[in-house]
Length: 185
Image (cartoon, rainbow, N blue to C red; front, side):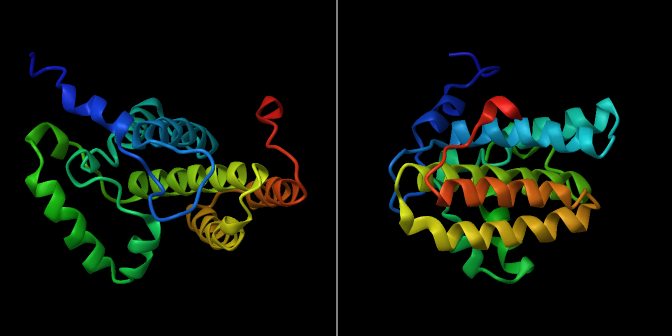
């Protein structure tokens, strides 16, 4: 097998997310990473980033959970319990240090990381909206927590508040039994 395209990256298609949350439709880490990269690209355009920074951010978004090839999914509720940034960084760096060098390369800090984290939360939000629209009412409280987190991150990056208002409309629609209409976005 070639080392340029290692098989281990394909394992992410079989690493399930949301293992501690009752759900109707499963999501893999690979699917999640794809959506995070899509949302990262959209956020970079909203921030008027140049092509180089956008490319670096999208590349990081595609690989941001790559260590889960080795650890499995680390549920967001568990990450929320780790309230200290130092604790979270130590937790993540333990896995990053144990990864092959090609996984460790290009882990950014600063604004790129913040944009990818917002994109990560957007994927979480839309997945939870989908779950709610499929009848899973057990995630409604989690959906509100994620929306509040998104609002803070949007403000921190200086993005338009109208983004959060659009998400609130989506949220209210799913609570009323509607489905997310991706055709209009």
